[in-house]
Length: 306
Length: 75
Image (cartoon, rainbow over all chains, first blue to last red; front, side, top):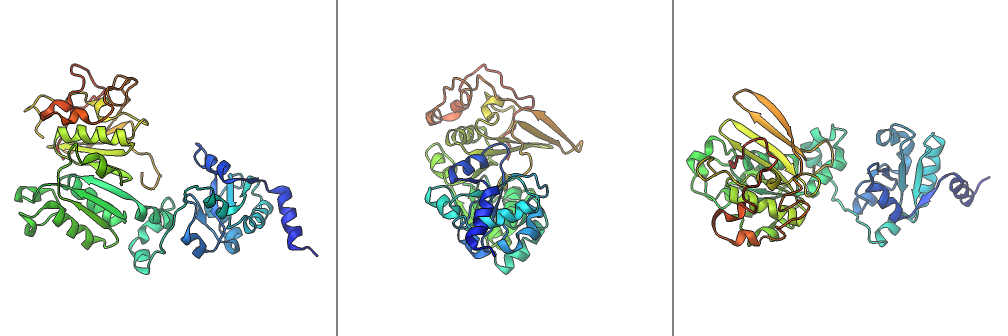
């Protein structure tokens, strides 16, 4: 008859362990391992490693294929202190998974080392219904939805580009949307700025925008910024956001936002239109060009309207 | 990008011609001479934008950029 101690010793013979720092390094490498948190769902919700999928110990053998179809996939398991996951790893090893590592010290040691963790509120029954179409997508799932709910996107301009962007981000459940626009709604806007309605003519765009977005999805926290972006406020404002969407309508702002995002290390999603032409790109600091790489100088005044 | 899936348009410009119903993709590259993100940047803070008017747009006049599509500001 085996004791628990025997079982753990047996597992340790075939399952290597790696400490938090080493695993974190692997997660940031070009080929990160699949992370599986084998604790119970309530433990996972109270705090987990962001990249980890939750498959509790009891379901592991049955559901591992969804996380790692190929038994050669590099996998890292963890639990609270590293014991449950050690036995879980041995079970995966027996199933043919030969590239499984146990996180030494578990989630506890990871968190104590000061490494990043995330905490999620459970999705409500309404949310599970609302985002059901996301759960059907393997690349999104419940984990992806939680990530969207934790995300913060700043929309510069609530006009022609900002309108559809804001609506679709809100619908998708992006948790925080900053809506920045100093203008009021004009009747000429309504031909394309679908975030606003006829009843909103004369009102500040961020006011009608906030109302529309909250009506569409009450999960979204809309931060109304009823001002123009300026050199004095830009760095402070963009700091809190994960992503900036530049839907502004003049060159001065575009250069300002470009520079600020680059200096702050923020990715800038850029869209612009003129009559029947549109263009989109993403300026990711140091990963690709910036706006100035493309357009070192603006066109002469009057040639292209803002 | 929020989900970390797919291929974002980093280094690519997607253009859409609504009349011709055509999408076109243009490869974009970093400009090593860019005053902001090039190898010897001259713009290291936002002070250039403190000047009034459109001066801030022209950090280095007479420099050709890598864009192959004309600039558009509309949004």
